Image (tube, rainbow, N blue to C red; front, side, top):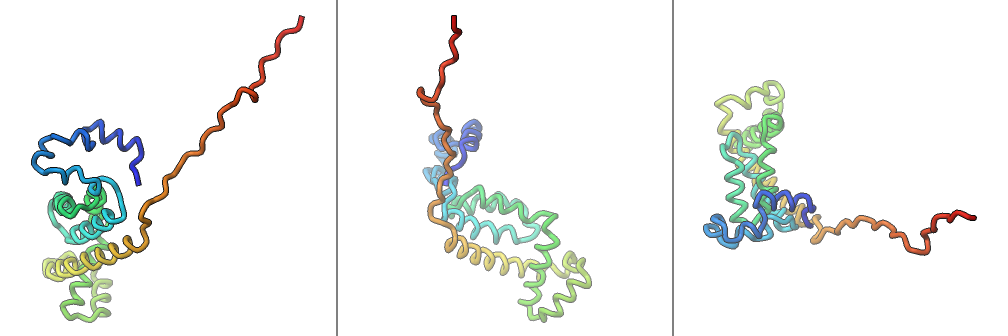
Length: 189
């Protein structure tokens, strides 16, 4: 899959193209891995690796600098950096009402609580997830839930994602041929 031309131009104008990065400070420090196509071009394996790296990091609640950590792990794991860093924006205050109770639920079940009782506890008092006594269950659940969801997503992507996506081609406009063009009417005398 190739990036659209407007995206390539936008990146090139900001000196983020492979050509402009060659020989730069970053290239001298990080080497040719910085120019590896799997970091920048979406492919089946780089997207799957980005999911496998990005989801466990995003499930850990209140982790500072998630995007930096995901970028570093994605760089060394040869994952698609755009997706790997983009997944970190799934853990926002808007997604916290879904994300945090799920981690808390899994943490409590791992600690030996009944799933039914834990579910009723969360439904009766959703604010309990935010309490300081729930932190251990919250982090335990996120440490288990993140890699499990990452592995499931990795398997699904590797099984369902096509190796090469078909290129979308725009239909060509019909060129006017000389025999179809009618000459203007000449004035008669």
